[in-house]
Length: 271
Image 1 (tube, rainbow, N blue to C red):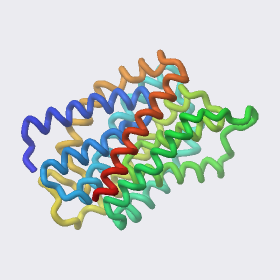
Image 2 (cartoon, one colour):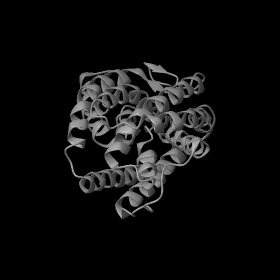
Image 3 (cartoon, rainbow, N blue to C red):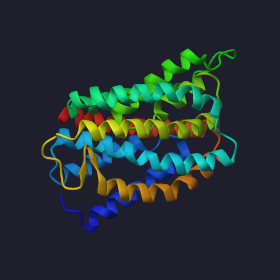
């Protein structure tokens, strides 16, 4: 696969969009990147199964950069719940290692696409229904947050997203305000990304037919271009997140997830 100007432009536009969404919704942009990187790589001759896996791994790697950029902006506004981050992070790292080092390498790309579609669609429905949690419900204790973190890390490792599609609904279900949930999710994106990317690199070392510029399952040229563009846009997304009303944010979040779920369902069924 040649790294021509058109590819650079496509990746830069994708990075600008995902960086803005990372700051706005705390989702790391991963659920937008995976479908589009899959399209970009597929158009350039990468086999469908491999394209999905490389899209997931490369998407996750960019979250290392977008997370740092967006969380700094959220932290300045005092929105990050660092107590929650500290309790969820150990489980996130454990779940991420299990997913990226084990299950990810064993599953076919088409199954990963179907799993991505199903879970993202479920998450969108839960947000759109906007069921009010019991007023007395709070975040679980240390053991409960360890278990929840493990689930978030595992699911993120399978679909290449920063965990916001699970952690934001989970925290709002526990009566964490949406703006705090989005900000805290952005902070959780960093440990999720670091652990899973390590696993993708190790798991992809002996894979055949990887395109030039690959490092394990990562496609390094895409990582560089998307990371630079997304870091520039993330603070603007944060600014928008604190200006939008809660209901509008939830509807935007759900609509985006439905569109991405539909595309990945199509890819999984056609593959």
